[in-house]
Image 1 (tube, rainbow, N blue to C red):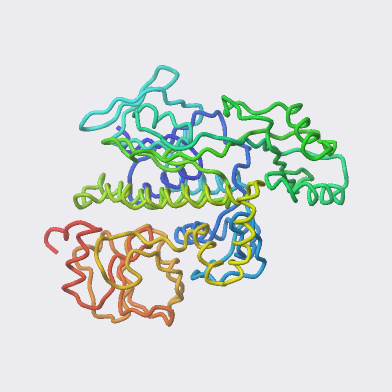
Image 2 (tube, rainbow, N blue to C red):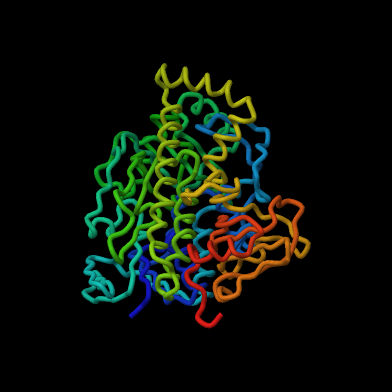
Length: 478
């Protein structure tokens, strides 16, 4: 019996598989598609997701195939070119098409021992107190101790569980595709600049190999968004919206997406959990979807591994939903607001003009930018304490290197600037790093495997009182 079956091989599923393998959990990823997708659903990642990749030693691989851009303000497309001072050593946006992200994450997961099976469609689930039986479309079945649905907004796993997915249906669809054009770049720029004055959902982005990623508003909302548009439908919409089809030809892929906004009623039923778009969908404004899902996986992986490996304290796995569902709700709210601000109606346009004035204030610009890049997240641990408690710690520079370079193994870390503390009894779950940093104004911090601060202080007895909450009981005989 496999420990965990992950359904879906997108960034969320692949990140989760890798996180579980860091803790020795057996993982099989089931993907109904016959091969990795070529569709570029995301064009990059923001600061917190970049930090996550740095914490697992993946950032250099991503930088080698991506492009760094300044972390300038861009809430609702209100462009503020000046850099926003973010509390991060990785305060930039990384432009990289999703298929390249998927490939790097898949390579990472497989290198750690995960198995990815394409052409395996899940059609049924049945669980008991010891595990979950998963039925596949070919009539075969698999059994696992846990199942995690990372299978997107139309999640089969969520539907089989009967979990509600309330929210607003799509009111506007957008056609998206990659193809070649037969006009010079100057013409593309000229037409796009003019059309985007009144239609922010239209755009052409040049890609490697001479093709363009093109987005254009659809004529109506599709009943079945899983069916891609025809090339002729795409071409006709370009003519209607832009007055020209740019001589498009040789499509690489075609797709469509909507602006529906939904949040799952709950993130798990017994031994089956949800992560990524299976748990939440929202308009793509701000480019937050990939990061939200990857960070779900980053939060869930070590907790589920702790449950499987027998050291997790009571209630640890439940904190996944308690911490991540409010984050998703906040993203849904900010994308609703951004979508409204991009409306061409007089009321939203008046608010947009007002907000354009307000973002000239650095504090406002930073607040709105941090919502998108997710560096402002603070989990509620139900106790008062140091301002760092519940927040992720930035990649501070130590005398012996950088903090994130010590986090590749996915374990907890006690960063001890006093040199007088101990994690005796928890050495199999927590690394004790005795080092100092001019960037850290605290004697010592206890970090969870996801980099969030679980304790701040210098008293050994207080540390010992907090360790069990996140890392279970002291090992027998310690």
